[in-house]
Image (cartoon, rainbow, N blue to C red; front, side, top):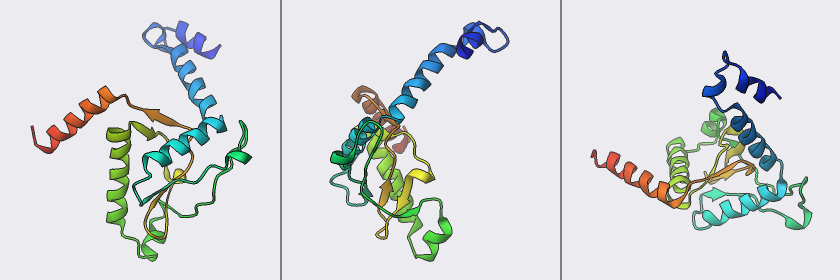
Length: 162
């Protein structure tokens, strides 16, 4: 009802904005985020995408104990990525962690096309071997191969200063 009101309102951008479309997109994302079967499938796919990268960790999904409203994952403790003082006091190499985080993101965007769309300090941690631990796979995105190819060309052109 609020989206419909905004859609009709001239002062709120009415016809120039798709308030109903924005509402529908948010509702879709919200319901995907609370579907734990979907989240478990996302975690499994993400883990497969990074199976050959030893410095990326994803908790295992225990499917026998997972349902639409219950997600059961393996315990993978780590230091939250924004706890810089703790990382420093344990002697972690911040440059290596930063490089790995960037590389992991580029792999998601340019190689697999399946990316973690909710990367904030609550969902990222660092393991004792400086591996990156990802949590919460409720909000994921996908980039089609055509777009990934164009992005790769763009990154390469920037790198070549072309």
